[in-house]
Image 1 (spheres, rainbow, N blue to C red):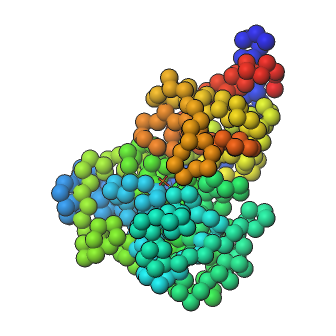
Image 2 (image 1 turned 45 degrees about the vertical axis):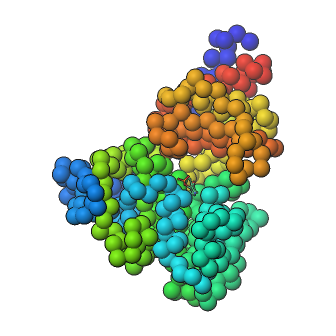
Image 3 (image 1 turned 90 degrees about the vertical axis):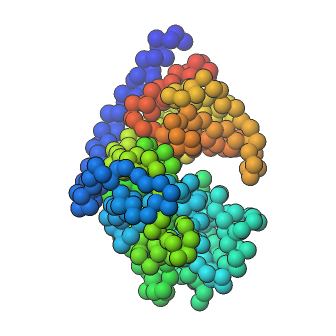
Length: 420
Ligand SMILES: *Cc1c(COP(=O)(O)O)cnc(C)c1O
């Protein structure tokens, strides 16, 4: 097949996809505008000023820029308070702080959406680890999702014990074979369970979920939302950090974990981080919309090449993750290599499958990001075992994702010698 024919095929496929996605894209833009308005309103209500963008050193006492940023986040997430700190190194760290802050020895945690995200297994003690919640005398129950991949409100209620203090939801699909949950899904479940258990804290692992919908889970009933700033809420600009937004009494308890009991949120230097954290939040609604449009494009094109995707292009979006069943080692590897070859950084590196600590099979990962591990930037990864599912997420600009998909179509035509 001549290069020209394959180029036309790629162009035609992409054109057909963009035509079909026209209304979906418009909807994504509406969500982005609403979220942009929400963020701007928060900036204005707090009178964010030039002086707030410069940071403090040492203990970081009397850091008005930091306190204001936390109030801005609280407004955006429609909560009483928030913690937004560069000292929180990841989503896992933020989740760990929240869990250790809310519970005490003898308490019990219910995981309402099946097995929690891989990195939390060590935090909770599902996988033995030094310092886990299990070591501190905190027990847990995991309520599996039902056959449709939906949570089971009846079973969740039944799993609550007299010592249950915390119920955890995961909004994003993560590496599970299910759709992400909407804020509305979570509202329904929280309202139901709270009727019989009013003293319990309902928290949401919000990673990859922020600004995908027009409301956050905390606006409709959840007590806490938790996430990483090198994903959605950092807008691709925040170089590090995490946030926890929620009810004042929980934020106070968690604040003691962030620094020290007695010190809480009064201390915490911001160095040069305030500007990128403010700017990242400002950009987040738009950047997330770009990643979602890219994901919709991939979800439309990849099935034409023979790969099953979830969610499909016509299903509602509630997180950034697109799962793609490549069906073969070669196709998964080829996709990841195209993602890497399209990256702005480290494009010359060719990703290969390799063993990873904690994983049963070899894993292939592609990411050439400005921020190490920053996954609002485009990335792909997957374990090398049938059905060879790859997880594709992020993209700071729609154009970047478009060019990556185009590269993959061309590489597939070339390698397989077949037209789609
Ligand atoms: C990324 C992620 C985490 C963990 O965040 P890290 O920043 O990688 O530690 C937790 N839960 C979900 C659903 C995630 O997507």
